[in-house]
Image 1 (cartoon, rainbow, N blue to C red):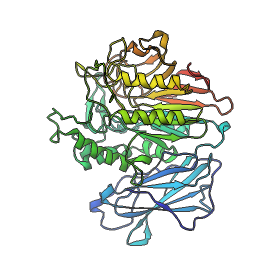
Image 2: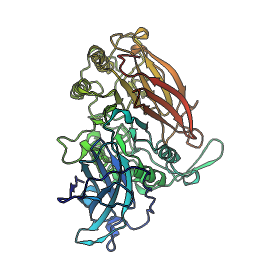
Image 3: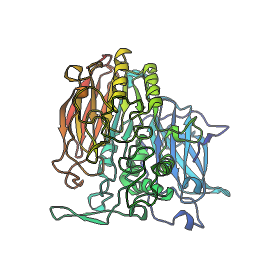
Image 4: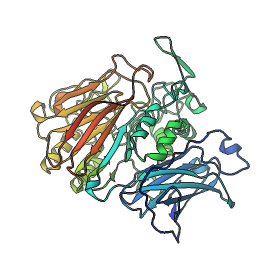
Length: 523
């Protein structure tokens, strides 16, 4: 897995106006890499684009055998006058995946791209070309921005069910044709075993597409890779990836439920008990299977948190609430400098927020702020610990951040998350709070995208949340056949700068909508 480089003699800069490219819907038949001893390389897992900015983007592919990656970009689906990019050599060291960085792209344009895989020993032997498309971020404010977010995919034993058409929400999101998709964590459930069938309470049978890697909890690097590969078996996911670029973040289930650094597992399912070993394997697989700028080898350091700048209207601050946290505990300590972000990430976030000139600053959190998320009977998994008084434990770090935003008069902050497997809108205000040195703000929750539904979590009053809207099932772990899936939409108007959040449910309905005005310290 490495960056590609552009051709030393590229064709003219290519842009695209007009309709979207057709998506790649490919069969996933054929031999595994170790058995593919002849023939041409195949890219049967589709293509993805990620971390797209005004002038750059990443393109991903996986081969079924050793291959050289070649990317072409153009203004139209005909690929006339295409610009060529020489990508990395794909081999077993990266599970035959590779990512090419495209730079010098025109802002605010539709980019068509196609990926060709060539035999490394005979470049004339190439596989079938796979195509995709994405829009670069606008350079002009008036162009506007619209994106979707959600999380929680293939969880709680509910995998790809061919009887209901697989992960149907991805096709619904694709038809909305957003500028990009923010995946708010739990991109896979590496700790979630899939059974071939599950009988529901009403007698119906849920059928899962299964693979060897989903038959046990992931421990080895190959097992983690197989979990990330599983979602690409779904034709809806592959078609979505070929049309909509993503901004990916992780949470716990990419490794193991409720994990934290330094944890030693007491879980009979695992032979490897050291979570630091497991998380290192998981982050390698994550970087191999998603195009994430900070996880590519040429990055200054390999980390999940980053800022994706999407034109003058929007900066997306992708947080990592997993890698630097302290151990899960009751969360009642009066001094906590590590918190859920770690001291270094908190300083990074404050610094980047103060530098941002974007109208809106989305804080992409993989866990909610004011919802009580337990870890067993006594410990807390997220931030809020159920004590409505002054900040304690991980709340201290969030209080420091909220105070910083207020005193620096940073406008346009908005919190988006998933994790709790229902959808809701919370408004935080100091007049309702025990801690009052902050400006009002909104937090929106949406998910799951393809997992079990759960009842709403309790609120913690420390930061004064008010649940303005909630839609959640009444019992735990309802299958997608029993409870609809959720995703959210953010639409920023280019003329007024107004931002509208819509909480959507599978089936096309908007459950809740809230419009926010730009330039206000709190609202």
